[in-house]
Image 1 (cartoon, rainbow over the protein chains, first blue to last red):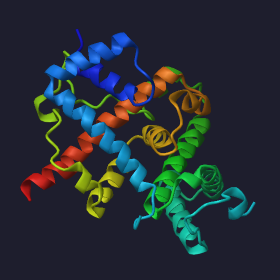
Image 2 (cartoon, rainbow over the protein chains, first blue to last red; image 1 turned 180 degrees about the horizontal axis):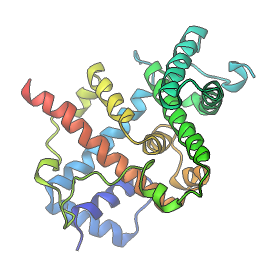
Image 3 (cartoon, chains in turn yellow, brown; image 1 turned 90 degrees about the horizontal axis):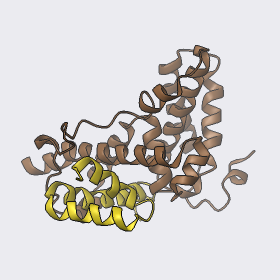
Length: 60
Length: 202
């Protein structure tokens, strides 16, 4: 059974490599039922945008 | 080697005052760690040379400063380990000092603790355009353990794959994934504490 710790690990890895079919399925099933992990998934992409923005000129 | 040789095509104007300011910050940082040591100048020089190699990806003073300090922390950690002159316990290092532990956001069953569960984030798109938000993000990044911050930036800004990062740092790709997961959990938790809650009370 997938818990939030394992799910967020897969959510994180999905940004860095393609997940296997099985991993993807377990991750999606948990995210459908768990609001915390669903928010985590949306928010990690904001972290990436913020990091890229930090590396651009301020008035860009 | 001159700056222009090291960073051909750099768009951000790297003028002397700007680099001097970063260098003096770095000297201050290294002195706080090492004391007034003969090696302070050397380690800062190494960090600047190392940092400049990837600098084309960084424009904006805050980002360059963050990047340079992250590399400096890494070099300082190396130097201090070397000085202890004892066999380095690889597994202790891997989990301890430089990677940082899993942030305590999950309970024993691996479920979100109530206080740590991600809160609703109303308008991240607008927040990204706020200078105040970017300052908070920069702070949160600086608060990460050195290797976490460096690996996060290598992945998200330079766009290196986990296996490239692993090769560069002598780690396994799986270990890099674990570090990225921790960095993301910690950064998100830090933003929730320092930004989202600020937003709520406003």
